[in-house]
Length: 268
Image (cartoon, rainbow, N blue to C red; front, side, top):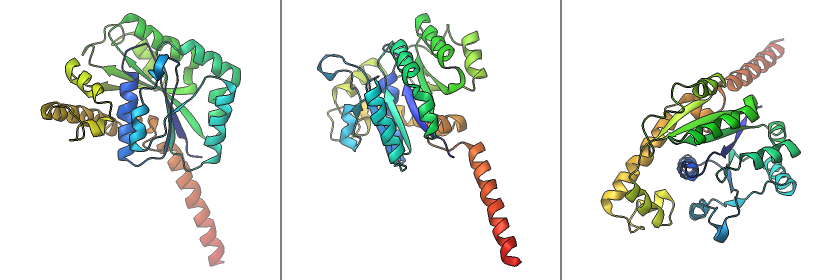
């Protein structure tokens, strides 16, 4: 069975998780994928739902609590609707222990597997030591039960002292993890982008109040990240933009064998 993806952005606070989630929603929209998108968190005034503006592009962003009731509703939906291509959930910072308790209580990843989904953990990193230690805790807990995509957020640096060349990077590689670069966007442009309260795609059109020059910079920033994703064969699989080549080969071989048997029977 082809594996679909359940994508979880997770990590330390203020490292770019929601930014990456929004960039991915833009990419999924571009490729016309049928996805389910969720957010976690309980900050006042619904500030935790940083994806809500994407309802304007047809996404129905819903809250997903770390409890059995919400889990059952989600799993039932994934089972009932076979046309779903993938699911994505954006988690608040420093929520790893809560997610671990949730997973341990209801075997969430195992239940996803039974429905043909495999988890991808997206973990942006900054130049802080505790951020990388958070990543280490993540793979120590979940091991090879998911795939890992580390996003080097160049807003913080081009070199990540506590990750590059360390045993943590080596562990990620040994687990089959991959790395992507999120290019730097100047603070004042990023803040202007946030202030539009629009999906990125709409913020770079005449519908927004952004300066024309800023729109051009944001467009190139988005395209650079999307091109990085599309040029990475493994990232395409981990992000649900392409099926696993191994599984595809196995299914094609099985289908070819069945066709050969049918032709053989017909010739007899």
